[in-house]
Image (cartoon, one colour):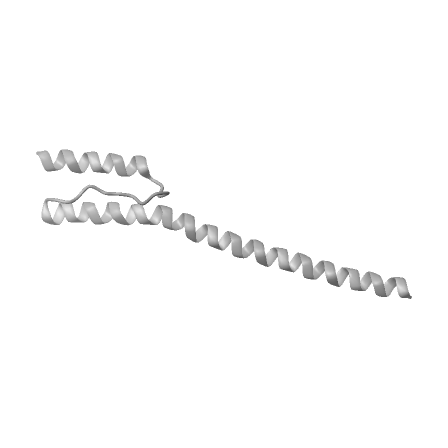
Length: 88
């Protein structure tokens, strides 16, 4: 009987440990998702803003990215297109 009591206690302890690890993993994944989504969403927002400004006003400033943002090659290409369009 004492053995079964120890086993039940052990399993409850393991359940608590596993639950804690699962919650920590979910929080970590959520924070990483927020961070990486901002690294993509920021450049997309700036591209849209610059292109809208170019269409409405005929001019815009080159797009500048924050350190760590993604889509650097795409923004560079858009900046080249904007520059070429402004020269014409």
